[in-house]
Image 1 (cartoon, rainbow, N blue to C red):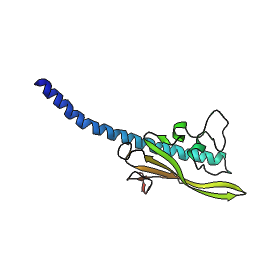
Image 2: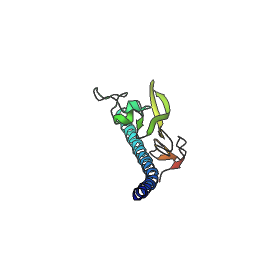
Image 3: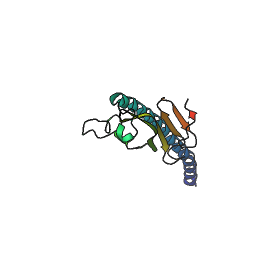
Image 4: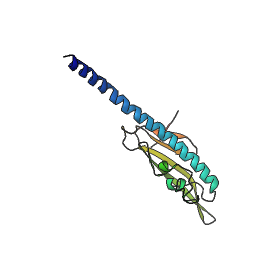
Amino acid sequence: MELLIVISIMLILMLIAIPNMLNLRSQANETSAIQSLRAIYQSQIQYQTNYPANGFACSLQALGGDSSSAPSATNSQLLQRDLATGNKAGYTFNIVNCTKTTVNNQDMYTSYEATAVPQAVGKTGHRGFCIDISGEIKADPAGGVNCTVPLQ
């Protein structure tokens, strides 16, 4: 009888603890996504400085790249490898809405938007995040890329 009571109490504690643990994981993923967007922003600033004729990079692959060869505009090695693949900590990252202009027969990207979307809304994260050339991170409470709520 005592063993049954102890098992019941353990089950009740587990039912309380598991949802809290899942919520902590999604909060950690959201924090990681915000920091990753800041890293993308910093990489974009460095990319624009190193390759002024190209402007900004319009792909994560151009910001990342393979370190076995010399850095270039398509392989700048400014972004860590796991983030350059577009998936990290339960979020999918992408660079979208690139604005391209042509200067002296050279295509130059003058603006961009980097997005972070949870791979499973409600499980790996609750909100989507965006950052643009202004450096301000905004959130989409629905988990998409309709980022209208500034982070505080």
